[in-house]
Amino acid sequence: MKKGLKIVTIGGGSSYTPELVEGFINRHAELPLKELWLVDVELGKEKQAIVGEMAKRMIKAANIDCEVHLTLDRREALKDADFVTTQLRVGQLDARILDERIPLSHGMIGQETNGAGGIFKALRTIPVILDIVEDMKELCPDAWLIDFTNPAGMVTEAVMRYGNWDKVVGLCNIPVNAIVEEAALLERDPEELFFQFAGINHLHWHTVVDNKGKSLTDELLKIMYGDASNSKSIVANIQENDLIFEQVQNLHMVPCPYHRYYYLTDEALKEEIEDFKNSGTRAEKVKGIEKELFELYKDENLDHKPQQLAERGGARYSDAACNIINSIYNDKRMIMTVSTKNNGTITDLPADCVVEVTSMITGNGPVPFQFGSFAPAERGLLQLMKSMELLAVEAAVTGDYGTLLQAFTMNPLITSGFVAKQVMDELLVAHKTYLPQFAEKIKEIEKATTAS
Ligand code: G6P
Image (cartoon, rainbow, N blue to C red; front, side, top):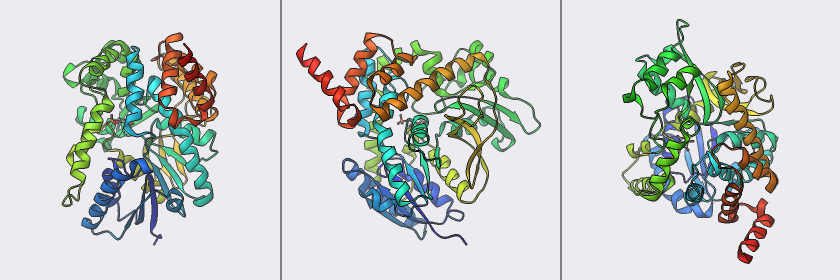
């Protein structure tokens, strides 16, 4: 009999916490969770208290012998942890609103994990995650870090490259959703199918074969993109999946929902600008959904995850998080798609960078399935975006302005030249509380702006 587990969730006040708790409850026979520590910061204290009480009620209703601790003291929580999960959002949704609104006000995509907004989310998040890793080295050196904090690929890259911590798995719900939804479109049982994903977080492609070895990828592309009635996206934060059939057919791989920003940039931008002017950006909508969720969580009679959580784009992530923990803890060798070190899996990318690939999750972490090389259509975009990520991660760690500007210049969702530099400067100033690594440069920008 294995000992009881201590799991620490940083960003424990998130509205997603009930999903995670539900996942632990459903797997309790295999995952003997004994202590769940929900950690947050002063700014998230109120949410942490509400969702923390809800978590306690859920555990009690499930009749599980597990203590739920709520704390603002991260180090106290991390002591002797077995698994640490991160789902924090530095600066909360207000920071995301700025990531979306500032680029949009200059006619560029404003998005949580892509374009200028995604880069700035990385700049705010990476130093905090690297601090957590330093604490882990001291307080729970055997623990695994399961990162759900976005941009998950860049965060995982930073942890491995600059934190020198290899016991990290970056995860995302997109592959989980794709398997469920696309198997349904194919009218097949997901258990009969093998989906192989390769790429980087929020920019991967996949193939599907059945248990007789027959490829179903082209058939799936036809169902998804050849029939307009199937154009609903598999995640709540992206409405449409209406790519040009002839183009995706030619890929012979299924793109992920975020490809819409790259393959249909003008359309996506037009819609975002429309929302920006009229109904509000995605983060502003999410704020409304969150408000409603926290009102529900306050109800002392509520002891299970409410249906309304499905309106968030990250729905089903508990399946990913809990399956990974279960698979590592019990060496279950489940097949899942995660951000992990490339090590030659995708031959088009450096061996030491992080990729998002289908892997077997063993007791020793993910072992990726070999993928090989992409055709030029995918390879070009992938190499560009991975290089862009490497620069953004480096800038997050060093606070170097030139490196950041280089990432901006390369990103296909950011208009080049002086407008890009202006957007970057505006974002630096707007987020200055959370960007200590750029403090000197931000002062300079502010001084120059006041002088002009
Ligand atoms: C998708 C992505 C997540 C992201 C979420 C945003 O599901 O995979 O990484 O966090 O969408 O959803 P939201 O409801 O916050 O817009």
